Amino acid sequence: MGAMANPVILTVDDDPVVSRAVARDLRRRYGERYRVVRAGSGPEALDALREIKLRGERVALLLADHRMPGMTGIEFLEAAMDLFPAARRVLLTAYADTDAAIEAINVVDLDHYLLKPWHPPEEKLYPVVDGLLEAWAETPDAALTEIRVVGHRWSAPSFKVRDFLARNLVPYRWLLTDDPEGARLLAAAGATEADVPLVVTAEGKTLVAPTTAELAGVVGLTVEPATDFYDVVVVGGGPAGLGSAVYAASEGLRTVLVERRATGGQAGQSSRIENYLGFPDGLSGAQLTDRARRQALKFGAELLSTREVVGLREAGGARLLSFDDGVEIAAHTVVLATGVSYRVLGAPGVADFTGRGVFYGAVSTEAPSCVDQEVYIVGGANSAGQAAVYFARYAARVHLLVRGPDLTASMSRYLIDQIERSDRITVHAHTQVVGAAGGDHLEQLTLCNGRTGERRTVDTSWLFVFIGAEPRTDWLDGVLVRDGRGFIVTGPDLVVDGKRPSGWSLSRDPYHLETSLPGVFAAGDVRSQSVKRVASAVGEGAMAVSLVHRYLEAQ
Ligand SMILES: Cc1cc2nc3c(=O)[nH]c(=O)nc-3n(C[C@H](O)[C@H](O)[C@H](O)COP(=O)(O)OP(=O)(O)OC[C@H]3O[C@@H](n4cnc5c(N)ncnc54)[C@H](O)[C@@H]3O)c2cc1C
Image 1 (cartoon, rainbow, N blue to C red):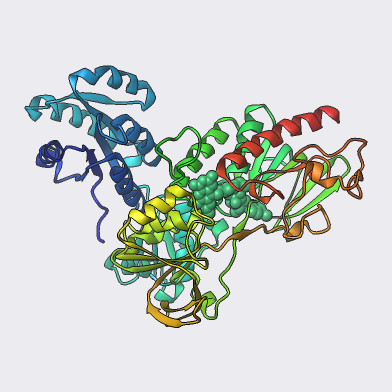
Image 2: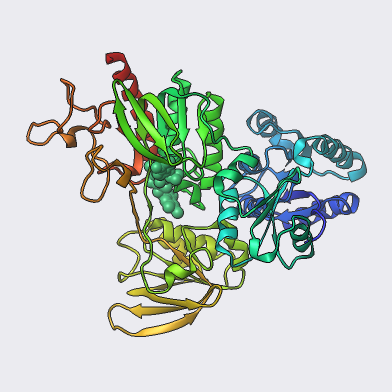
């Protein structure tokens, strides 16, 4: 990787003849300054865009055919807007589809529609594209606003920085220390290979092995609250927290959402959510998160990143929350939406390779490195299934390790079908990881068949773990009633044999999502007995806000 890559012009058409012809015409005129990328369907084009995003490259123009099976050009352009909002959008239509094209001007903010055939290009195609590229070149997106990260492929701190930037949807360019530009940047910063990761901002500021809070500051994420008193503090930025923030702020409540890592929570890691209402073609967790973030900010909610809440207490009518650095904020009400975190795989050796071959969750930053590799995934639920389907696009083979006899016990049928249809995924039943070994990164796994006891060793550098999750609510010990597994108990479940929870000071029973501390609500996966789904988390987030109103009115 040397100088910055040329910006991309992406064209998508299901008809290979048309697709080749468009790409040829575009390359002829723009090939020197732009990289022309061709895709045969909307989903394929979206995958290409995601990779381009991960590499920190820019997209100047999207040119999509309208009539494509599965995903229309308008649907593709709408989804693509989430990834590259500044890219110019052109729809290629037949005369009969001009109504759809005109409608798309509103739906996807279309810049232009071109009628087929576009020949001769000198008259019909180039004048349009010239104008659009000129307009794009003047946007900030076109400028060199990228962040560069220099690191080692197998350095866990380097991975942490890349993962943080990717989850927060901050574009960056990844350079290895032995890449000439990486070495040059290291030397310029007076750093050595031992100091990585090195982060260089668009303004040229350098940070050596920054903390996530330092990184958040330089990439423009908000880390400090604007005030010290709110109507509602939402803790956790997954679907439940974002749902709460959108509803609370849109209804005029002074709202702050506090997130310790990156907004999106578990859903943000999902490569494809197919069962969320209103998105028949599915959408990625990153898309859902980005839209929800923008929606919350539009209504005036504050979103704080990299702040972990470590304490909750009552102070008169107010609820006080403390952050890990001792800062406190107060509010009339609190919505706890802290979800669950992955359980850690305890087999000997595995912990040594976290971030260096062993990853928790589907880590999209690593997907391009898995090309033609043997990838192992542990887990039998939907999250593991989605990851298997996702990594199968890159890997030579994906091995899905499950403890039970098959996938039917805990995976949705639509995912099992996709896995069965893939010739790159092998399901290993009754199989567990019992050991890991390697040098500076994972190189081998020992697997054990739970039925026969047979052990074998396999060579691999990639293990993705999805073995269930648990709430991390220790900081609420002694403050709120939790169930035996740490989930927060709410509403009617707090009233046992007609008795309200000890310390409950009001003459009414707790509201449906209210915890044992009045005015503090719990929503989403962290709540005892909740349904672990995106839709229910968003729904509970919204419902908690209606209960916040009820609580405030009675004060
Ligand atoms: C890979 C994967 C794929 C999935 N696919 C689907 C799917 O297709 N369909 C579906 O319906 N469901 C799916 N799920 C489940 C769905 O994502 C969860 O049910 C949903 O995200 C729960 O939302 P939540 O807001 O309650 O919690 P989470 O999404 O877990 O979010 C909680 C947030 O709180 C933050 N947090 C925790 N503690 C603190 C603290 N003390 N201070 C500050 N912040 C804190 C965390 O960092 C996190 O961002 C999937 C889950 C995974 C992991």
